[in-house]
Length: 188
Image 1 (tube, rainbow, N blue to C red):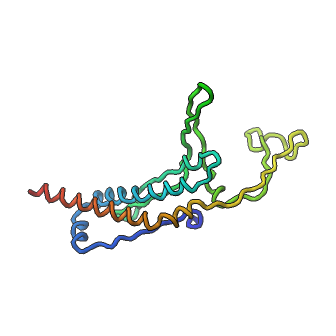
Image 2 (image 1 turned 30 degrees about the vertical axis):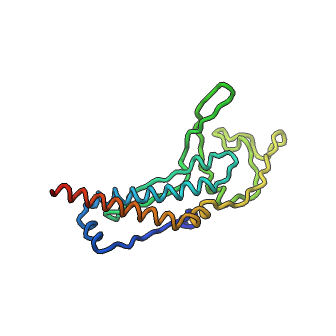
Image 3 (image 1 turned 60 degrees about the vertical axis):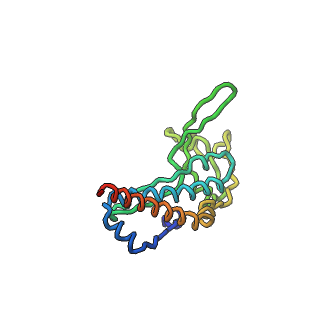
């Protein structure tokens, strides 16, 4: 199940009757924009905590983590955020006098979080040509010792849950107030 793979932070906002009247007057598109802004700022806190708690072997996993904000399809106004590794990212490197950019794939977050069993890796076995048949006495397979699970994203979720909710509520309230006073100023 997907819920097993990704920690989920859910928040609900208690709204006063005065603010509820303001929200009812806003168009769904404006309310969605406000929700996206609030969720993005809350997601940023979670992403930064996940980056700080991620393993530091090469730093590529931490650099690849990002937050994507979107609007749900079936709800007229609202937003959600997903934090995880991007498909690829650009890493700057320097080798002597040479400076360059390297595009790196980073789809191994699930392996770090859930761990791996001991297994063999065989170079060339997944090439289009098929590579040499396994096992090849001339090229013995590499033995991978496996990796212990390190669920750094669940740890980040536990650490930041309260802060994320507070940030979402703070930004949401601020943006609703800003939209309300802007609307009032246009009427004058």
